[in-house]
Amino acid sequence: MENTDTAVNYVIYLDSFALSLKVEGLRPHTISCYVRDAYRLGERSGWIPPAKLKTAHVRDYINWLSARVQPSTVTAAQLGLRRFFRFLVDEQEIATDPSAKIKLVRFKVEPQPTYSLAEIAGLLAALAAFTSIDEEAETKNYRVQMNFVVDQIEEIPGIVVKVEHNYDHYIPHAVVTFAENWKGPSYSEIADRMKAADPRVYVAVDYRDPARKMWIDPLNLQDGEVEIVAEQFRKILIDGASGK
Figure 1 (cartoon, rainbow, N blue to C red):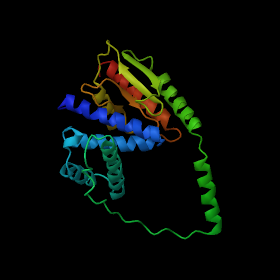
Figure 2: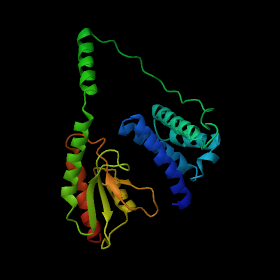
Figure 3: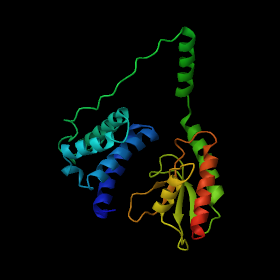
Figure 4: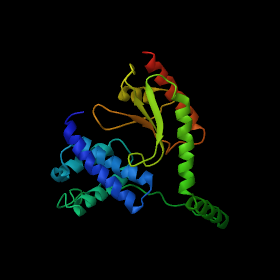
């Protein structure tokens, strides 16, 4: 990663931004999305300080993102960036929002279908079930999943793995660090192997250069997928530990 010191300084702003969102009571997934887009903007802009970000930098990022994702996702990213810049204005780190002059990307909204009374009743029941989700129970389930991952890989030589749920990890994550006797590939290479595998699995790697840890995030895992993730992770780590 180029401009490492500048990148770290930029990420300090992201840490403060994430903390402010957490204090406001936003859900971990929402915080993760907002911080992700602010991070990508910094990466795309060469990690220049937020005070020097111009409308052109934001427009370049939006154009880059538009070529890769759906318009609705681009709009969501723009809203996240506006939230980031509003935070910086409130903190008096910048004077104005450089994204304010950029119009939100338009996307087509399909007409909503007509529902019968029975279907409406079913939708209301589903909504009631969703809004009654116990965040504590949800977190407990994430921890159970990540403990399973830990159990599958903790005996592999050269790694240290544990479940972490703290400021850096908004929900329980299975975090892997390499011990001094690890002779295998780097964190980034392990993550690349996981993405290239079948099935493809995403492993998060920290922003530092060189990276100091990687982790499994259970946020979007469906029932039965944690076993697949753990098996794939175990196989690739064992291959790495054996020099493959």
